[in-house]
Length: 180
Image (tube, rainbow, N blue to C red; front, side, top):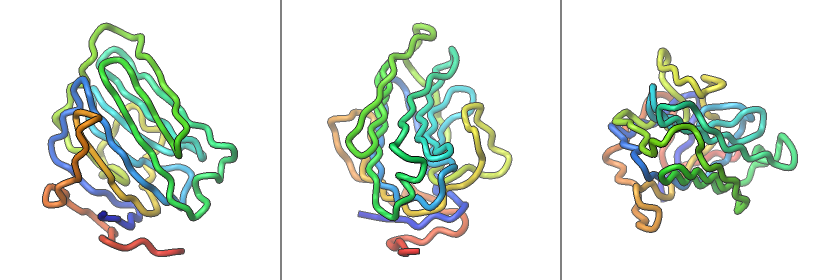
């Protein structure tokens, strides 16, 4: 399993289509409480961010954004030096965010459209300067370690990430995660 040490920079997966169904599983070891973890799309989009210790999963299918929030027991719960498992699942109008086995869900109410029309890069660990997505409360890059376990259109069809499709930008170290 590939792991990345990310420090205010990002990985880029080219031309991701979210559509009506999308899921991703990550393991993270964050060292900051506020940061962009994942972002794809501009007008219609899917984002994952940390905001003062909470985890926010946001989707906009073109009729306004919908958000699912995970609030840990303390604001420092995810910055404890341990790996944390995060799973995002979007199918049609259902959004599910699972953090360390605790799930929160949202049934999207705005509009009848269920597709999230993207054919944009998926940024992991931050977004480049000049890229703005309406749902992002911060442009701070992720500081810590990330392992991508699975990313697939169909949630039951597990597939490892093809690392030849990943572009790295900035201070990113492959296959290591420093303790400090």
